[in-house]
Image 1 (cartoon, rainbow, N blue to C red):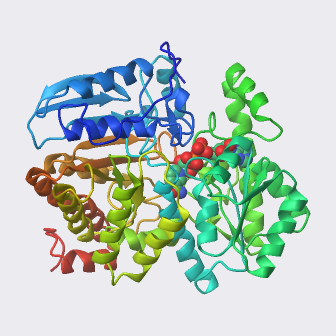
Image 2: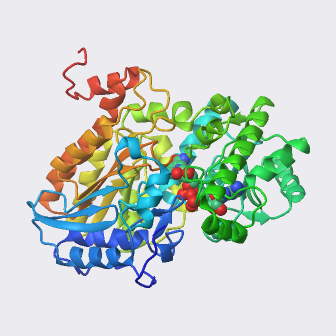
Length: 556
Ligand code: NAD
């Protein structure tokens, strides 16, 4: 990664009702940028790293300072352009245009690989934006926890009669996203054994109540997991160690989990995966001294890891890839059958995408948890007939601690997002909540991503690699008046493997915001329905027809 010449500092988020910028949209962008880098939210704020390997919020500290200054000065009819984390221009636009447009980590396809990216990153010309890191709508592990919960809930429905009770889920990676796994498993009443090579990550999940206990002893971990499984108790155990070493040891000992996955940052072999036999410190030294050698060792270790997963799958573990591209790396390393276990989207999530459902979220710019609790109540009122959703909200209230600005994740679909956007805007207008609310989503959404090893794996019509869709999604959201819109490459699965777009819109209680919210919260999930209807999914076709979405070539 590029060196910063300006000293890192502790980011203190703005909150409260006082405006620092010239409008609430600019203020929202500023607060969400700062929130992404809040000590409680980001994985390595001193390096501007938010999550997912080296997913950053700004290219370097100079760029960060310039973005903050520009947002403070930005007029209500201007648009700031960000190129891979660096502010490059301010143009006159109009009041309903996005206040910020961002393009992060995009490379022309033939150059789109980590080697070329790292060259540019070293020269200070690029930044890896991951998904919500570079588009300023990361809300900590909560942002992924509902998706993870929904994934395990669907797996439980398909495989275990609707619950993970009396099962053990084995996984690795307790980072920004992966840290949601233990909580999602215990929310589904199961036992989770989660391996991480970095003890600070394990401790952080314990501090935020995502994880129950930790150990560095494999025997002890297996004993605890087995006891909880037999007793039908929900329990999550963090096990310190390297997954590529521990999985083969488990096989030797005759242990086989019921469910198996992985969320190490395998998408980024240089920064996201520690090779077998290396401590964190030794890995850091090797990464610097011999990056090529490091990548080679990391990839070899991933191949061992995947081979062990395949063995456990053979012995009956329900196994799936959790969106980090580890199968591809293993395949490139010669593990021919690496794709024998499926990705989580085709296995568990695609039906939700067909109805435009995905990781929708909102954050309270006031910083006041009461604002989120009031919106929770409105949600429970508005969707009182949706039992699954109400269960989720109640559970989230009880089990999820806020990180940085209070926020809520809620997988709403087409129609419901626009409806609830108006409810939120009305609450801001009436003063029921104390400051404007930011509404956004992950790029891992129904119609905003092309990622053939993840969100668009095994599309019915074979259109997995077609990336026109996220581009259309970004364009229609910008035209509709989203507050900031981003177009990224390489998120989730690494350079060369994905293109995706982000969208954030501010509910400031104004009439203008009401109109923009209605437009954008319709087109954004609508693109998910359209993308899947076009690919031939019956549920998406039915949704498009029932909701009256105009698709010129869909048979009516
Ligand atoms: P992160 O970089 O914050 O965390 C990765 C964790 O893996 C770290 O804690 C690290 O110590 C650990 N690790 C690395 N090598 C290891 C090894 N050999 N054995 C055990 N632990 C090891 O990343 P994150 O934000 O948690 O994301 C994890 C992965 O999931 C990424 O590839 C990301 O792109 C992907 N992802 C998945 C989803 C999803 O919905 N499933 C969403 C976003 C991202």
